[in-house]
Amino acid sequence: MSTKSLSVAEVKATLSEQIRSVEHGHPVMITRHGRAVAALVPAEDLETLRRLRARGPEGGLASIAGGWDDSEALVSILEQSKRVGRRATPSLD
Image (cartoon, rainbow, N blue to C red; front, side, top):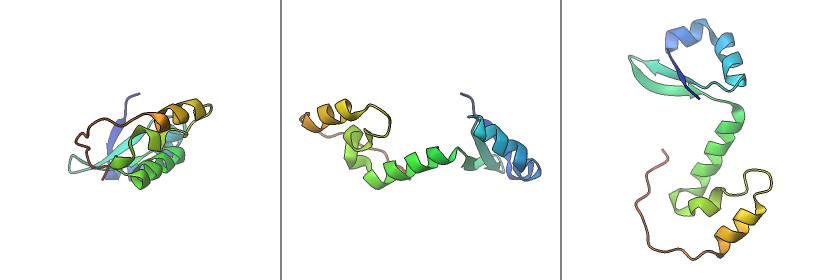
């Protein structure tokens, strides 16, 4: 899925249209002076981001499993798996 990139002024002038686009699964990147500063995304995507940030990079895959239907088996497998080694984790901020 491609992300549309629009300036703040363009989004301001066409906000209702951009919200309809997001509702149909097309996120919008908002730029200021050519630099990405914000995004319009579906509300459920924002909730997923909040959950990921709350778990932090140390939570690993097991911390986000369970966010979709029928994922209980994966959660169980991940919780029982032994963690081997550590790797660098990027900041979610």
